[in-house]
Length: 401
Ligand code: KG4
Ligand code: ZN
Figure 1 (cartoon, rainbow, N blue to C red):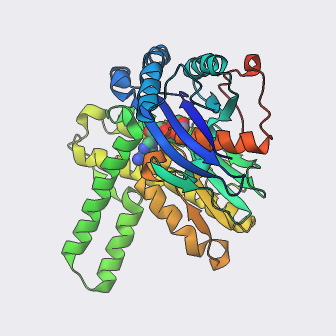
Figure 2 (cartoon, rainbow, N blue to C red):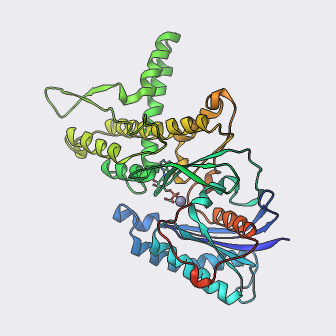
Figure 3 (cartoon, protein in one colour):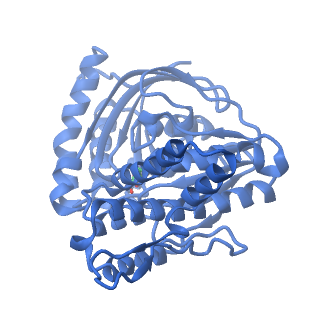
């Protein structure tokens, strides 16, 4: 039976609503996107250097009715009749103020249209986003188990093991800052605008490319080329440079730590890495004294360090649990270096056995309502359409998987 679902996402600073047709069971569900609208609040929060929760709430409240109207219009539905069979809404984790706006809005619609309301875990949404598309049709693929998930967002850094589809066991997570949070904080230290992740990744990418260009231009025969390549790959870790501000030209190392990389568990820590950047900038005389090239080198070394921690532990987990499928999701998956390093695990991890690696499509890497619709529908089916009472649907900022 095909049902029409409305999905709502307001966990942080993106307001998103979509309408999809969904049918099938857990392992063979398929979806057709009928309408998909969203509004990013980036411009509103830029002056504050990060998400300002009260403003985020006001923006969600303002935009939810506008986006709903746009979606209903696109599908040629009237909000006065019952246009939808079920509503899916994010109830955590996230900013509680933001989450509540979506939940209150969803409850009103659920009461008005007399349709079930399905609360959705935002992180499960990110996991299942790998099946989705922003438009058109898509379906759930059958995946070989065990499945490992590397979840990387502004609030989360987790390695999750799944021996059965939609069952989750967290085997490791960050003990302090999430990796996206570290990207955002380091970007602020480097005087880059919010949201910092994409900015750092752009700057680091430029430094990486110019490094590779210099190798190509050198046009040396293989051995010299190879050595230079290693230097670049190791980037600032092995390089030392002269500090322009100091007349005595004292050398400073740009090397940054890889916290907890060799611990035997699957946990992460990014707060020490962030502090190391802070001290590095201080030792260089403060951000105003640092030129663009050095800034880019710091961004590159930071990106290398953070991604190396993620990739190394992921590889260890793939080997230990004999993983067949690896899912990488959450906003930080937009980072090209992370995608490249994880893709390289495809053949080498798990004793050389091939593993299948899934990333979301570009449009579903950040927060979106399509992933909430997928997770909501699959849980609705899994729970045989049983849903909690409206009064029991609450925002839970630290909701676990
Ligand atoms: O999943 P998401 O959109 O929102 C949360 O649920 O947190 O993730 C947002 C995070 C932010 O910290 C942002 O800076 C980071 O993802 N991010 C990136 C990149 N694009 C977004 N981090 C590193 N490199 C990127 N290209
Ligand atoms: Zn997210």
